[in-house]
Length: 63
Image (cartoon, rainbow, N blue to C red; front, side):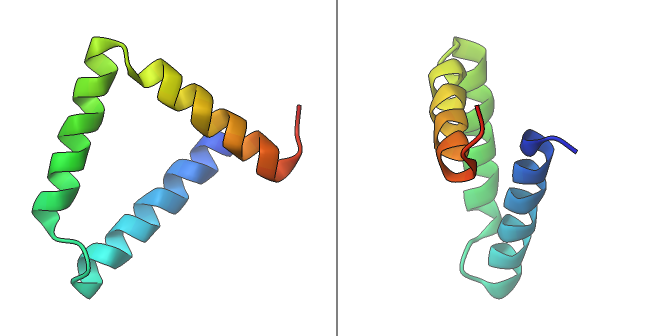
């Protein structure tokens, strides 16, 4: 498994646990998901992906 799949799986588990505990409402998750799809459609996702990749590489010290 590569780093992206692990990160996505981790975020899915955290989101599920937050919704289940009542800390995060389902409509919050849907709204953020719609925002993510919108950002991808307008092309703003590339800088976000670049920033996340930079942060993950900083924490894991990979090139």
